[in-house]
Every structure is written in C-alpha cells, then in structure tokens.
Image (cartoon, rainbow over all chains, first blue to last red; front, side):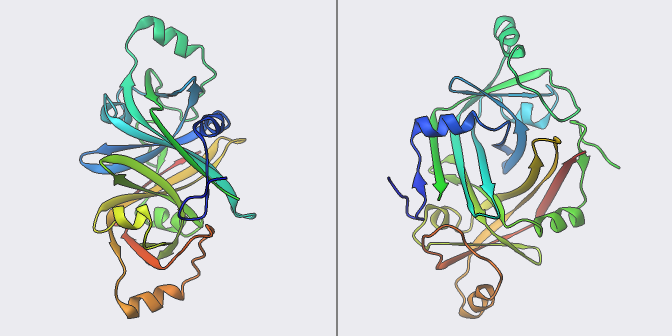
Amino acid sequence: MKLDSAGLRVLTREECLHLFSLTPVGRIVFTDRALPTVQPVNYYLDGEDIVIRTASTSKLAAATRSAVVAFEADQIDVDTRTGWSVTAIGHARAVTGTWERQRLEALPLVRWAPGGQDHFIVVRAEQVSGRRLI
Amino acid sequence: MKLDSAGLRVLTREECLHLFSLTPVGRIVFTDRALPTVQPVNYYLDGEDIVIRTASTSKLAAATRSAVVAFEADQIDVDTRTGWSVTAIGHARAVTGTWERQRLEALPLVRWAPGGQDHFIVVRAEQVSGRRLI
C-alpha cells in the first residue's frame, strides 16, 4: 500500500477508473477569462473518456474547446471522515461528428439541470490520479 | 429568482458565503506544473476567507503561494437530484506571521488526513458565485 506525503493511500489507474464509474456527478476544472473555474456536472465514463452534456451556448462549451482540463469525482463521508477522490487530466474536445454523436446519445447519461444539452464534451483521461482517506 | 442559462438558480454572495459555512470539505483548484489540478481539503470559513491547513512540504503549499486559485464546495443529493455548488476565486497566501498563525490555530479547523498540518493557506473570497439545482 503506497501512501502520499499527506498519509493518504495512492490509488492505481485501474482503481481510479473504477471509482469514476461509480458516481454520476463530478467537477470539471477549466479556465474562464484567465481565471480558474470549477463546475459540477453529470457525466458518464465511456471507456477511458469522461462524457459530459451541456448547452452549445454555455460557458462550459465555449471554454473547453480543445483545452486541457481536469475532472474530479469524489465520495466523502463527513461522519466517518473517510472517502476517496479521483482526478483525470486531459484534452477536452467538442463532439461534432454525426456517428459519434448518435453513439453518445445512447449512453445512460442524464443531465439534471433543466437547460439545453445539445452539446457533448469528451475529456480523455490521459493522466489519472486518486487518493483514499482510510 | 434569477436563473442562469442552464436553468439553475443563481445565488447571491451572501447565500454563497452562508453555504460555504455549512460544510467542512471543499476542493481547491490550482495549477501544478502548468496543468489544472483539483484537491479536496478540509477548510473553515473565517469571515470571507477560506482557511486550509496542510503540510508545508506539500504540493498544495508550494503551488498556491501567491497564486490565484478557485475553491469550490457543494452538496449534491444523487437520489433527489437536488443540490448546490458555490465557488470562490481569489489570491491564496501562506500565513507567516506568528500572531495570525496563533489566531488560526484556535479555529475549529480539523484536518482529516493524517499527514502534517504545520502550514496555513488563506484564500480571500474575492469573487463568489453559486448555483442551486431545485
């Protein structure tokens, strides 16, 4: 068992990807007008890709076109003070092809926010890291 | 009631600061070796400052010295699909003065991770924003 400098257990890439598959909500981190920004979103782990739906007119859609972003998911229990956090870093891209779009529309990805969801963003999990507080 | 483009209710600064006072865990967003990074941390809202404890040798301590960072907290209920998210953006600084350090040590700020916590980071909530999914 490998621990980091804070005493947290370091998770393997496989453990991180498994944990990404367990929750429907994560947080995408990007830059908006030169400032760091973070926004919770629904997502679906499609292989090693994070798939997000949003409105094509959204700030998120505009700011993540071809950007390198971070994506984080966690489950933290305040009562027991246990939990885990996983982060993926990679290039985000807007889905433009008809076939890929049709395939992604068939995924069990439900967006909770009532606004538009005509735009798909895919973040490739190029670097993955995670920690567990035990 | 003001809604954003995604149909989420836009929270006022006062509402956001109140919500920041409700949870002990948030996520700090910073840049590490030119890549976006996000890390869950315990925190305490001290007036309009986010106070975080970490080890002085940590990546977090090194990367946030005099940087502009984002700090996010949320509470999202997967079953009811409701929740809120608040974000503060501001300058982070390392606490170096003895008197300020003594004052911060008296705050009810408990770090769950077992590693060192000899270093205080203060993030001034200069820009605050928040959304509620209702």
